[in-house]
Each structure stands twice: as C-alpha cells, then as structure tokens.
Length: 422
Image 1 (cartoon, rainbow, N blue to C red):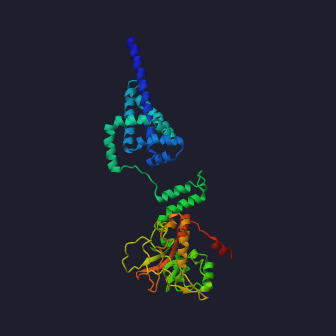
Image 2 (image 1 turned 60 degrees about the horizontal axis):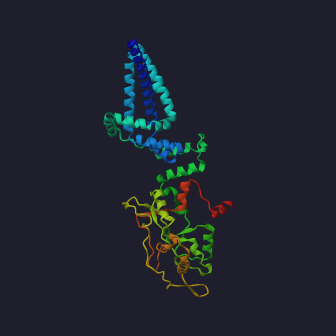
Image 3 (image 1 turned 180 degrees about the vertical axis):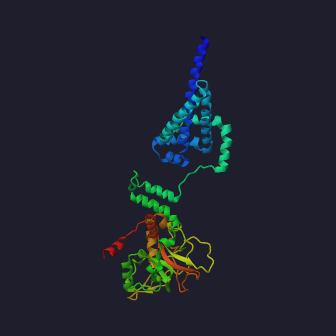
C-alpha cells in the first residue's frame, strides 16, 4: 500500500514537473521575443514620453535590458535547459516514441506559439511584471551567460543603439502623418517642417541663395535722391546690399530703417549712412552652420562666394569673422555735409547714436545693451575693399532663405503680396 502511494506521488510529481518545464520554456521563449524586440531606444522613449503605465513598465525593464547580450544568453540557456529536461520526465511516464511526440507537441503549442503570440502583443507589460524573476535568472546563469555575452559584445558589438538614419527617420515621420492613412496624428505642416529640418544638414548655401544677377543692390557712391528712395520703397527689402565699383563686389549692407531720417531733397550719399559689415560664406557651407552664424546677431544676410579652382582653398573661417577689413574710423561727427538749404547737419550715423543713447534706458534687452556699432563699416577717404582675387561672389543668402528651406515653403511678406496682386 505504501509502495502504491509512493508510486502515485512520484507520478504526480513527474506530471507537475512536465507542466512546469513546458510553462517555463514557454515563458523564456515569450520573454526572448518580447524583451529582445524592444531596443534600448524604444524603452528610453517610452520611459520619458509614454503613457503613465508605459513609463512604469519601461522603467522596470530598462535595468534588466541594459546588457542585451547577457539577457539574451540567460533566456536562451533557461529555455534550452527546460526543453532538454522535459524528455527525461516524460520517459518515465510514456514510451520513447510517445515522449518525443508529446514533448514536441507541448513545446510547439504551449512553449512557442502561444507564449510568443501573447508576448509579441503584451511584451512590455509581461516583461515589467517578470523583471524581478528575470533578474534572479541572470544571477543564476551568470557564470555561463556572462562569458558568452562578452564574446558576443566583442564580435558583434554592444548593440546598445538602434537609431534611425536620416532617410529612415524621414520616412517614419511621413508614415505618422495623417495623410498616410495609417492613423498618424501629425499634420501635413508638421511632417513638412520635420522633413525640412532633417534635410537642412545636406543642403548648402548654393541651394538657398539668390543669384548675384537677381540681387538688388546699390552703389556706395550713389545718392539717396527721390528716385533711389522710391526704388528702395518699391523693392520693400529690410536689408539692401551695398557694392563698390561692380555689383559682385558687395562690401556691406544698409538697413532700410536707418534711412527713415534721410530727406530725398538732401541727396545724401549712400556712404554717409551706417553701412553694416556683411559676412562671406562659401557656397559649400551647410545651411545649419549658416543658421548658427545668423543667430549670433552679427548679420542676417551674407555674401555667397566661390573659391577659384586654380588656388588652394584656405581653411573656412567663421562667417561672422570672414568679413571685409575695417576701414579707418570717421564717426565722431566732425565731417559734415550740407543740405539743400545750405545748413549743416549731423551725419545720420551720429543722429542714430544720439537717439540710441537717449533711449538706452528704455531697452533692457541684451541685444540693445551690447555695442551696436561694432559691426558697422568705418569709412573715410581710403580706398574701399574688394573681394580677394581667388574668390567670386555668386549670390546672397538671408535668414529668410534658410527659414524657407526649413519650412519647405515660400514666405511672402506684405510687399511680395502686393507684387503678386499687381
């Protein structure tokens, strides 16, 4: 009787071990698919910007998944151990053929198909719930799994990043747009701006510039008479390039707002108003670098130059420093010019400085408290500068041109619309 009860107890123990091994093998198989399908980038994104539940789940999984090769080795070792031990217990219950048939059926159905189907859909939640168990298994299998994982790290690399390339990320953004029909929430404008930002690094100044033949500029020796003032008003530009001798030799620019105090009847020369320095940038300079230079506030317009092929191109200098050389100072107000009525007047630059000094207490912004005249050309009777012989001006680029490439849309101001309507 005691022997019968012992045999019966052993039978149920073997049945329990068979069920445990099948479930354990299925659990390891499911976790292998569920946890290894989540890259560290995916987990970090979910931990920072997912739903509250996803944040909690990702925070629990991240410490376990840091060393992915160690985790993979641990799960595969446990899965292999369970599947190898299963026939041992089945042999004592059924024949060898039946053990093979039952083990294959159980492993295939309950150890592979069902666990992987469930974990592929709910891998994040299941992985977070079983993270403590996986942590214990890692420590148990550490003596065997760790050396194997280090070999994999050496041969295959750590594999701790799975970032998208620019083209792949752009395609991913397009798929998330609501126009793709896949349930994305991004609007057309959002996907366009993101795509423009991704493409901006591959575009250069030559892609966004206005050719020098289409650029409106004025001669530094021209007079600000009524004709020229009306022409400036008609063009509607806030910044106008200034050239010397030929349109390709652009030496600076004039802000349209600095002409508010100029009377056309006085016919003041252009060189009597503040002429700001203008940077020179190579036509191969990336738009991101040009945008960074524009953000410094030295200038929102630059001359695009091309290096001659028969000369060795020097190392590119920062756009803010790659400007024409300063001329001698003559902004102390001693040199005056006469108006139409014969009365002497202060130069417009001196007027602007006096106005700025009187208003300095009203402006607390850092852009107004710095030296506003550090980027202004100081002009006297000396010869005006010219472009170096190895450089050729091919166009002009502005902040608006770069922003249009970023938005991938044209920006129309009031003057543009007036020209369109006419």
